[in-house]
Length: 385
Ligand code: 2IP
Ligand code: CA
Ligand code: CA
Image 1: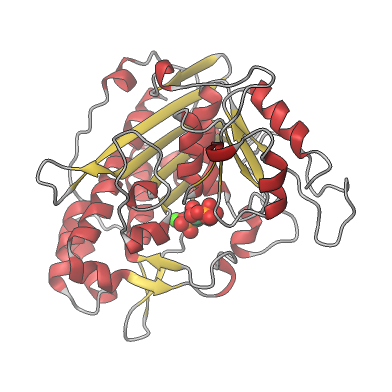
Image 2: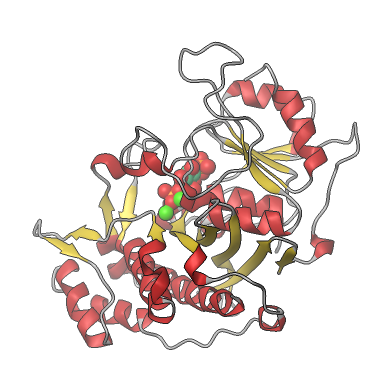
């Protein structure tokens, strides 16, 4: 399975390249945005966009992984539907073809005949990249069969940040509350039998400006957690913890989080210890990197593809992501919809739901690195939300 990790790292870097190419070529980028419709709509946003970049990246990952592990192909799922509508109202199924020219021809039909844009995209998709990660290469073999796992892809998490393309000036490695660094490629692997997350790759295509100041450099992270086998690319020294009783904690929240949650956390996280950032994946990454002790979300606005990859990294580091368990609308206090404190799983759709809602983390979540911190946070929230 070390081979699957290598492959996911490679394809995540190709995905990051596609994301960068799409932003670099302005006319291409403008062609890419299209409004979501119907059941796939993420209720959270009045205007949610899916981009051709998202669809193309997801299909590229599916194609590259399926080519090496055909037994996995039917178990690779993602946020996006590969049905795309072009400017003429025609519906086109976006796939990656065997040859670059064929993919370019197919993409041209989505891009209203724009051959230049289609060729640029096809080149990035068919790039023969040999991405090296020495720590991943040194990993000793671990017993996990491709036939036992499934994959969740969020081709671009933080789409609105990706589309807006804002930049916040912060020192390298610091917490970013919005902008391009919050946009991530997330590829998570889970066990089909139990739904446990076992492997994750996170690629941040827009980590920092390159030497020219015009382009971007990315960075990536990975983790594996299966049985007694745990390995993660994040160095131990990078992580802080405030597990002692009484120590202040830092929590990262969505800017749209409920006032009740902010108020409940305020005694644990005084002043600037309560912070806000865009992107569900980015907020979990903040916990992985020790930029926050916890990420608390009280709504069902994230999905399996948002949490699977970073959840695997947290598990590799001894942490996790649990259900917060919120009350159904109009329900009594204490009447929980899902079990508070249970680790999220990734293999079963939510009963009675359609479209994206089947895969929502319905009861909200808490991402943590240290179980003592988790207990303090759940204790503080008990009876208040
Ligand atoms: C979104 C994205 C948003 C997040 C939302 C996710 O995924 O990560 O930023 O909201 O929950 O579903 P917030 O930033 O308020 O946490 P996508 O960008 O893939 O639609
Ligand atoms: Ca997402
Ligand atoms: Ca997305």
